[in-house]
Image 1: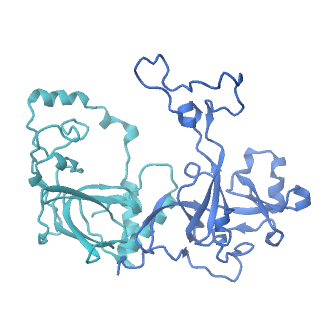
Image 2: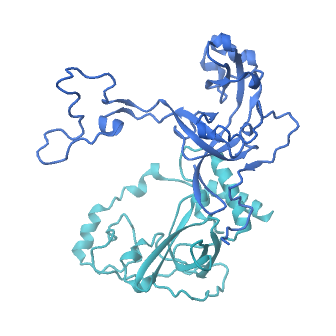
Length: 217
Length: 242
């Protein structure tokens, strides 16, 4: 089953009591306001309360490119291209100003972080503002979209061909010698580094149990 | 540190402070201490008694309390004297109060003048020989000496500093946690001294706190969480602007 990534505490020397207290608040908020299950690559529509808008609320549709932060400060960034201008908005999941979050299209992508869409052709980031929610058939699988995105000519905001970003969703049209030169920055020892291992299986089990108990009440 | 939202939708950062096994250890009267007011010695977190000699345990034995890691003094007026041995809880403070927090800052060790005092240093290129983060001149010609207190490299951090006028947003009576606005000196899980604010703007802001302190075996039954009026509580529906 799905466990939202902001529930897993980061590795550090903080007292676990702090994370327990934070989780109680997060569960409290989830009981009142429904935060749906979503991954990076889903298309979401978010309505927030805006004191300066005429209707007092504003709606934004976009693809989720990144989910960051842990605990109550968890955020997600939605990207869309509106009238030829790329717009990214970073929302806080637990902010009280959010009125509703709807998932319009469910699909995972090959990467966890879609920041490269900023350097891709704008057609890959445009989504219709009045899109209807796509009905979901099975309650088990979330389809993985294996689209290979075509990029604008270089220079890019980050050197996405380098192995540190480990991006699988771009169709690199760079010459072979450039791709091999980029492999110079690969760090093959990183995957064997034991100090960087963070095994979250036991923590996740405990948190899942706690969540399921609390949300049933 | 955690985010907290007000009813108007603004976000503030908040530090969580836990009141762990605080007991009053001794009462020192005004004449004995030689100051202007009476003093109360208060001890924090419990710690094993085996790492200090018996002579250091006297204060704790008199109060009937296990050995504490830190002992601080609070200057107290005569009507706020508490009997030694009473435990102190987070409910001593109320949301909406203003508070000063003192702690030892994170130690940075021996640091140069650029990090310690914020000097600009020298340019990276254009002929500088081996001089990029040095203090430069330390005095004038006429003075013919270096003044006392001249800012120079040395040990930085690990000294007591206070942040003044921090608002208390929320109190958790079950786990004894105080939510204090903004940041607080010190590393995570360090010992911290929390006092009523001495700033003149917050002199009358005390909002009827329990005086002299909150007694657990008293008649008052407090709810688990005490919130300030402006805080957005997660039980309420989302904020809308009319």
